[in-house]
Amino acid sequence: MYLVSLVNNTSVNLDHFINSWSKLYSFSNESVYKASISNEALTKTDIQNLYEWKNGMKLSVLKQRSLDTKIKAKLSIINDFKRNDEVNIEAFKKEFKSLTATVWKVFLLHIIEPKKYPIYDQHIHRTFLFIHKEDFLNISNTSITNKAKEQFYFDRYLPFIEGNNIKDLKKLDEAFFAFGKFLKTGNYRKLVE
Image (cartoon, rainbow, N blue to C red; front, side, top):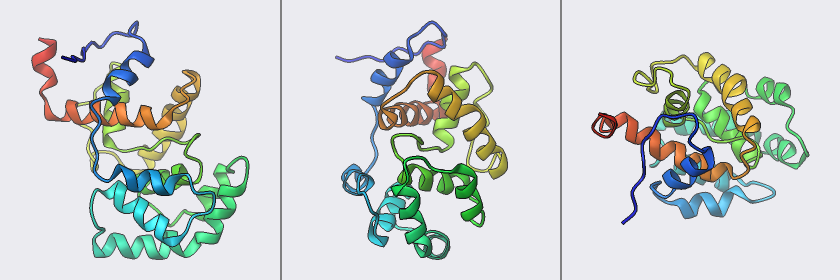
């Protein structure tokens, strides 16, 4: 039997946390992600598949329209960013300023350079706050503005990853996602009492 400990202790090794919680990760259609993310040049189908994977289901009419007009329409620009050794973040933000949903904008950045830019969502944010002994209880898709989410991602989350020399960003995402979902259930209270 495999048990995962829940201890909010800064002396606990982050690698151990990632290894433990990534084993509890479960997300549908993981093969869709793996099939498209490593392509050197993306197609519109790759983009469609990746965003449906991230969404966990087929996109709504509004989300599909946004994907078509704000992302897929700029496929050649996306592939230009992907071909460069380093993404110019200011140029990326300027090019995709009409993409206001931070989760989608960061996911696009992840698609472009998956080994440098991790995925971001409410579960990732919640886990980060828990690890840093900050208020994680009120994190949801609507509790923080997109501007604050983007600021958090670039000013706190990326430096945290770089400072801890985390190499396997997919495994990190899996662990933080699984743990953040667990925290959202409220069941963690039974384990820490």
